Image 1 (tube, helix red, strand yellow):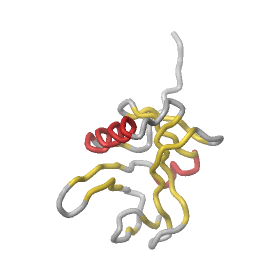
Image 2 (spheres, helix red, strand yellow; image 1 turned 180 degrees about the horizontal axis):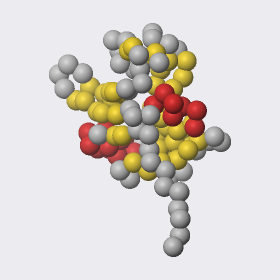
Image 3 (spheres, one colour; image 1 turned 90 degrees about the vertical axis):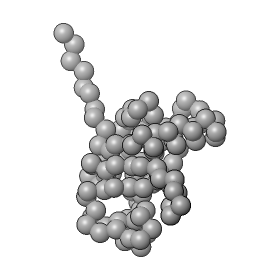
Image 4 (cartoon, helix red, strand yellow; image 1 turned 90 degrees about the horizontal axis):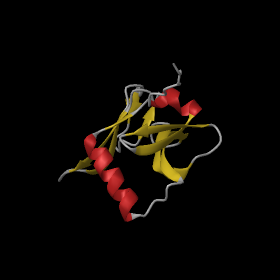
Amino acid sequence: MSTENITVAPVTLTEGAVTELKKLIDQQEIGPDFGLRLGVEGGGCSGMSYILGFDQKKEGDTEYTINGIRVFMHKAHGLYLAGMEIDFRSGLDARGFTFNNPNASSTCGCGSSFSA
């Protein structure tokens, strides 16, 4: 019996987010060496901003596969992103990716910045 380390992704992607991401991967012809980078960085109106984009794996990253999408996240960012849900909304009032982060003590009106 082999024992494998199964790493569970600390974030979830809704069906809408997965559909939109796969569409972007096809439209922008994202190569197999690239994955979706999730993370945080200092800045934004609430102190920290989310990173969401396609990138290559870097030193210090943990790799996950979520619904067939390669996801890269720096190990230190897991503290801020654990339990977060990423959705894609396409409506009259808003269009884009949204972040539902249970670790955020406050967020701003733009929805892409938070404080922990």
